[in-house]
Image 1: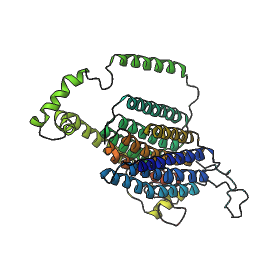
Image 2: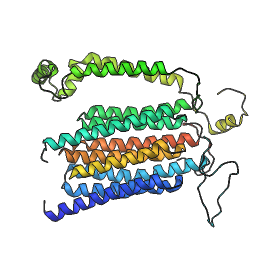
Image 3: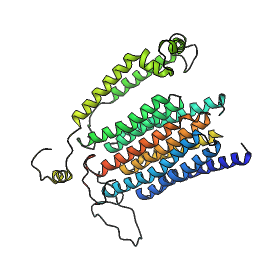
Image 4: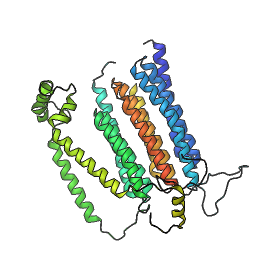
Length: 119
Length: 203
Length: 95
């Protein structure tokens, strides 16, 4: 395989790894559930996408390429759906987003502290 | 695709397996400690998923498929359906003397680990299983059974009674689950009335 | 060079696992478990290429499907009260 393609594939894979780290760090450090969903979305799209793109270049147009493509397409469609389902469940479970200094009115449930659920 | 079998590969494999086993240990401790049963069910799902990855790293793909499908998929959904029927917070029972139990469990675990020191290493070619039974299966399978895949011929023909017992077990489990959890489908209006406490029957 | 990738992915899994164990509400744990499942899929793909036998990618697809179904099932149950007949608080249809 020519050197330029190999270099490109390793570049893609390592940048995917860096984005996975950034997403995991965000998952740990961000203050609220809904902002952590953004960090999880980084891992699901950029992390997986870049690493699998690097693996695309490592293998040619074979069956392995088709399988990797199916994995990527499935994660691409399934991960926002799962995040949406989780966010709906969180809102229905009465978890409030932690907004300060926001000009969008947020419904306030006076019996709950923000970020706490009823379960 | 060249096959890299050198020393570096075994180091990485051992590292992966040790790290994943330590994750399982952390999750086990968390499952014992957490009181909210939803969280426990989800962590049990992750426990099975890590086990399945360990099976992939050890090159046992069939077992990994089964572990993923049963442990992370079916078992999680079944436990959730069970949580409908019971309370979702674990009751703390105070006042148990757990020191004697701890000593007993540690002693038993130590004796078990001591017993495995004598076993042959993983994949050792001098181990008894590789010298008596396995060569016979590998050499005679195509003549005696005729199925090209040796794993299938072992599962379905040489060890057919095991497979029969497993189908019994799974069938019984499914019947038991249906008897406990499966009920008729309620209409949505009925469900709302039931939740508000306005129905008189006990569906 | 695959070793660095594998070690990096294992470190990321460890960090996500901390959130799964700590997370104060059950939704944090569901989110962390979903991300852990995706990282498991990446780990299997990279491990397949590391050993030179990328034929186990079917397994990665199965895991992606199963972790997706698990997350949807848990979200559906935790918000509503019944898996088969949810009592809906909003009117926008099923998940």
